[in-house]
Amino acid sequence: MKRDAGELRVDFVSGAVAHRLRFGGGRGQALAKAMGLRAGKTPTIIDATAGLGRDSFLLASLGVQVTMIERSEKMYALLADGMDRAAQEGGELREIIGRMTLLQGDAKDLLPELSAEAILVDPMHPERKTSALVKLELRQVREIVGTDEDAVDLMRVALEVARNRVVLKWPAKADPIAGIRKCSHQILGKTTRYDVFMVG
Ligand SMILES: C[S@@+](CC[C@H](N)C(=O)[O-])C[C@H]1O[C@@H](n2cnc3c(N)ncnc32)[C@H](O)[C@@H]1O
Image (cartoon, rainbow, N blue to C red; front, side):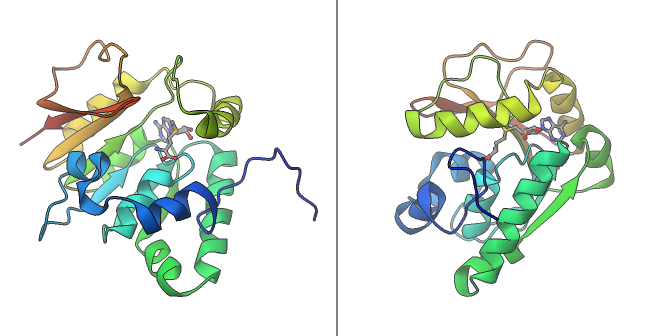
C-alpha cells in the first residue's frame, strides 16, 4: 500500500532515531542520566507514556529492559508496527526491540500491577515547543492523542509504584506540575528538562 508523504509512522530503522543510535552520547545523555543509568548500573524502567517510542528505544539501545505503556489505540498500533519492522531488520535492531515490551492501556491502571526501579512520564504538554524536525511529528501525535490533562494523576500513581525514582520529562521553561511534591533535582537540556523525583 502506498504511503502518504505526511503520514505519521514510527521508524527506528532510518532517520533521527537511527542517527542517534549511531552517534548519540551513550549513558552520558540527559535521559540516561536522569533515569539512573551509570557504568555497571542498568535499572529496569517503565515508560508510562510510550508515544513514538523514541525514549524507550534509546534506553533499550543502552541495554535497559523497558516496559512501555500507551493508551491511544492508534499510537499503540503505529508503535507496534514500527517495532515489528525494526525487528525484521535483524542484528542489533532486533536485539534492541527484544528489550522493549509494549502494553496497551492507561498507565494509571496498569502501573500498580507492574514493578520497576524507574518510571518515565512524558505527557503531551499543551505549549510544547520543539525543533522544526520533531515539530511536525509532535503536531501529528497531538492530533491523535490531544493533550494529557491528567498528567498530575499519572505522576501520583507513578510516585506510589516506582522503587527508586520517577522522571518527568517536561518543556525546559514550563512551570512544574501543580499538585505534586517538589522534585529532588533537575537535568536541564535546551528545550527539555528532566525533573527527577527520588522515592523510597
Ligand atoms: C509526548 S508523547 C510521548 C513521547 C515519547 N516519550 C517518545 O519518546 O516518543 C505522550 C504519549 O503518552 C501517551 N499517554 C499519556 N498519558 C498516558 C497514560 N496515562 N497512559 C498511557 N499512555 C499515556 C499519549 O497517548 C501519547 O502518545
